[in-house]
Length: 297
Image (cartoon, rainbow, N blue to C red):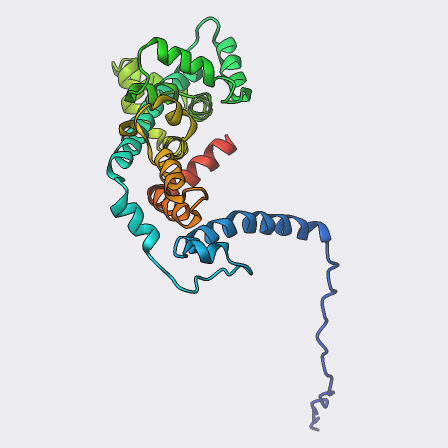
């Protein structure tokens, strides 16, 4: 007797995909991108306007209605800067001032930060509080005392008079100290056991570990020195000591006559910011890393 097994007929079932429930819109999550977008526009649009305005004539800049793109692009503003104005001397002054200020700031800020981070001595906490307190003092408040000090030292209209006030700053000391606090003491003790003194430990062990904060501090210091206007204007008494921002203001006022030549100003500003952009692009990775590390630690 044989039994026949029959396969049951397959039932035609259509599986309908389940649709995930729609998440409600959280307006709070949109607030941050919206605010950042407004801030980005407020930062980028004036820069774009400056770059485009450098290729416009004075009449086109003052024309109404305002047009973004130059109707008749011209290089006259750049020719005026490069050929009618002696830009080499102010450029040298700005480069020399920025390079020396960056070098001295990196050296002294890292040394002071090292002392406040890894050395124990009486009054260290008081010094830290005083250094941090100077961050809350506006620079305009210390302008007259600094000028009196520089004048008494006989440094008016000299390079040292331009450099001295910016050789070290509270921000640089704070930045380097915060990073050096995270350097393991065991690493420093091992260097001392091997016979390394404090200077050798600092220059051969500590500084190579501080590339990121040093790059961050270098960019901030270079930008501050390169864009400095009021202090060089006060200290410099003849055009041989003028920096680029001071020369830009004086030359634009002279060329503009009774009115301001905005095209000339925009072209000069565009030329001035090129070195800063190059420096930032070259050190962008170290700059971002330094900000992240010092922020986390």
